[in-house]
Image (cartoon, rainbow, N blue to C red):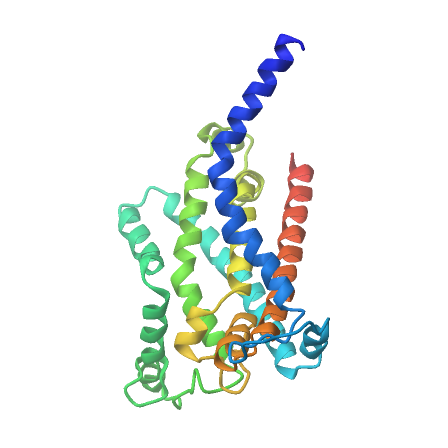
Length: 298
């Protein structure tokens, strides 16, 4: 055996030993539960029944005939897509503005980022109080100052999902802004100087220099926003619990309701499998799209 091959083999063993603890933990806490969840989805297991049996794909067939499944999947995608678009559209201009040498820049960074450090449940209960349709609701008091009638922000099926979405935008736009701001501050100033010499105005410098170089942050923020939007649960739970009706029902709230409230554990496991596949497809599609964009601009 050649000495170089022996050295490479020894190095590979060292690397394998170094990652072994993480690999074992990942296998125990992620791969194994995922496989078990898939196995349970093919049974009629319930937390209220000690015995269960194999029933094949009946849970999956039942899901496709469940009216709430359609509502939950539709609401989850509307929530995730609108959240991703608005969060990034708001965060990029904020980051550009705060990258300018303003005297109040540090104060504004703190103000915009502060909601991200609060508990989601606390934010949900706080905004539920602000948006309540009762007379003491701060948002409706503001609306009445302009001579308008009070609005049932969380009780109206047409408004409830977007009211919750507004709350999450308030909390997480500052988090996305900080990522964009760090990226902007890492851009070499000489690129802007060269653009100025070539006669580029502020708009051209943004679209020709800043935006293309924000690619890593845009891809990261879009991916995180989409996945976070699809698996949203705590803010919905604290503000509407999925109501009124199915207006704010999402995949995760329905999954929890079926699995723990109704005790249909195997049915919820089947929904978990579908949710896993949806997130996997969306993640792959976003990653593929941004890789194509990177090839185009490079």
